[in-house]
Length: 378
Image 1 (cartoon, rainbow, N blue to C red):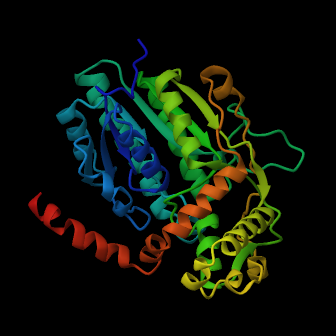
Image 2: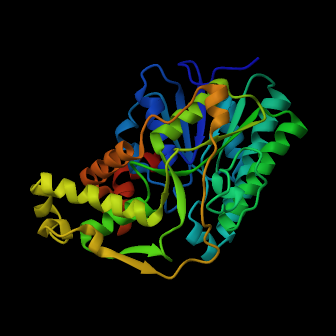
């Protein structure tokens, strides 16, 4: 029996639901009036932002739990208390630069944390209360390593060859999920996605970092010569892809989700600069709001581009072959790179203060003000 996981009678546990992709996924579910109930489990580390869900927290279908995925007892108690039969696992340390400087946190969260979740799910779903269930694990194309310019895109059968501590930790977690399916019979699926972009992305990643630096008139740092290629996937399309897998994906199956948009980093940044230049030319009020941006004075934002020393082990090219998910589940991205980037620019222009609160640490003060009473009552 293949269960449907997203109807109004369902209850999902979403780990990392206060992070970038998790927030967009949770918002999509809750904003659907016929969608499921969602319990968000998030440790609220530096990249977890509860503010991103604040306008939805009065919904009776959204429950927030501040806890760590490594706390297996808490996870299992949540599953049992609400008879939750679907886990969508986003929670991860995900920034390559941080993994190079401090890999320990990536091992703890991405490997130990994923194993803790799998043990809790197995105990309830396979051991005590067998029945239809699904553990969906969200992974990355970085587990496949790096491609040369003429190489075919990564497929689900591409051998793993991770090149950073982050990618290695995600590869290990993928293998654990696969092992729990084949060894214990846990109903699992895995998706490996390309680079995501869109609303609510933490401003250490390329697109929001470039956006914030442009508005502040700061340098736009580009690693090496900027010719590293990534496939860019609009986050809403990624969420749609995960929904398709939950509804129709085969147990034990891996699905690549790509944006069909390969771009060199330098080309992406130049396009982003041009879009911001156009917005400033069309909306004079932006110049008043952001006087340090070159576009406020009729100068191109591209003038801020600065090339910096490349990071160690920087993969040259990622590209996703997404034929399987299109062929088997009928999924294909809706947004083109142009439409997705335009939506992203407009969102960050309208939510600059959201980013600033995160960058200067005021987000934690916001959380304390908004939730101190609720946390004290627990």
